[in-house]
View 1 (spheres, rainbow over the protein chains, first blue to last red):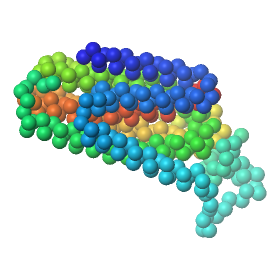
View 2 (cartoon, chains in turn red, brown):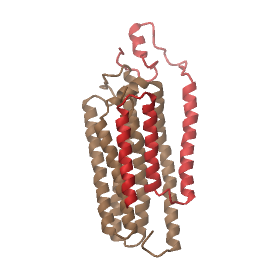
View 3 (tube, rainbow over the protein chains, first blue to last red):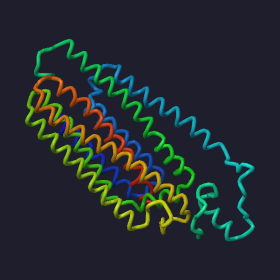
View 4 (cartoon, rainbow over the protein chains, first blue to last red):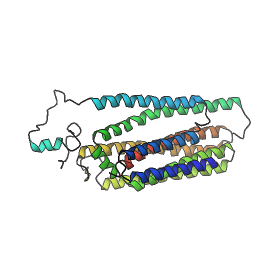
Length: 124
Length: 210
């Protein structure tokens, strides 16, 4: 029971750190810190609350197989999305980008958005 | 660990139940995974809009809800520890706390949804996020936000129901079976907690400092 209270306190400290650090501008370190803390919290929950610490290795294997499969799917689809440029198919009517009003609607600071939504408010 | 004498048949049933739940959870992760992938893709493609949209969520509600869920997970682990020591009354009390915390989480989430409604953050015709230059991408963030939090809330609702079932089963059945059910349903509760552990920084903390 004491262990559980300690784990709870550790979880609360991690929550405070991740929330506090998110308000401090650290650049990319913000994201990395948030991710590391989320993984640390998960490890605490999985090892102590879900008993992976004392369980047979088959259970740990099931957890690892699930995570590995998910990472494989992330890597494969990620590689596809990152390297592929989206091209319009022939039957899609291309928007007339010579008209400034339409061109405005489809471009923005974040990049080309034409495929996402047809009714965007004109961007500034 | 159990107060009962060691019984190989019962230990085998324990192991089977545990493996079954872990395999189910491994399949659940495939269900939630694509939502996180959609988020990652959007954040990679339109970082400014995603950060602006993430800043417009309610940080206090998110942080309190995270604390609530982490505490409820601790209470589930405590209830199991009590039940294994045959302290049924204490176990049931801990499970009442878990259910209350679960409802508190849903209540706060509902309050947030109400706020989102008033601030025109529901994807659709009236969507408007003033900070974002790219409205379509900000709307995509909110689409992911609502999909993931509603899916999580649904899981939590099922979890509350299952915990309530365990709570009454602990009273009806004095044998080891009630403890086994509590352990397996506890695994599910912890899993739902872990999903939120990742949703919280993704939806609430991204871009706060920029």
